[in-house]
Length: 63
Image 1 (cartoon, rainbow, N blue to C red):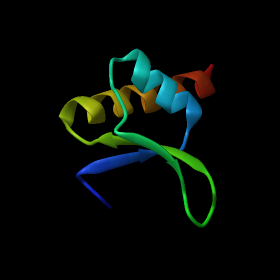
Image 2 (cartoon, rainbow, N blue to C red; image 1 turned 135 degrees about the horizontal axis):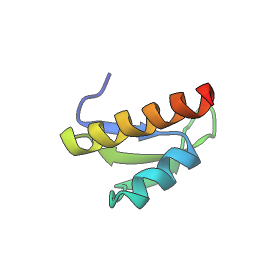
Image 3 (cartoon, helix red, strand yellow; image 1 turned 90 degrees about the vertical axis):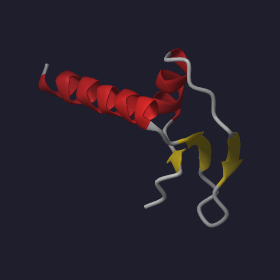
Image 4 (cartoon, rainbow, N blue to C red; image 1 turned 45 degrees about the vertical axis):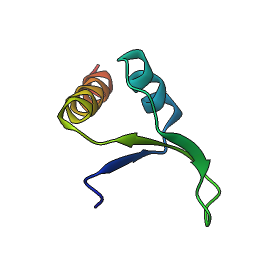
């Protein structure tokens, strides 16, 4: 796992992070899969937002 960067392959997650004020470093396509991804600098604030996103998804599944 790369602790320096977070590679986001989810459009919904990318939009959530953007709404939280995070900006991605770059947007590209994976060489082998051709899936679009957004690269973010990984830090504590980003990890907190990712945890919040995942918790919200769990709550939605329970409802």
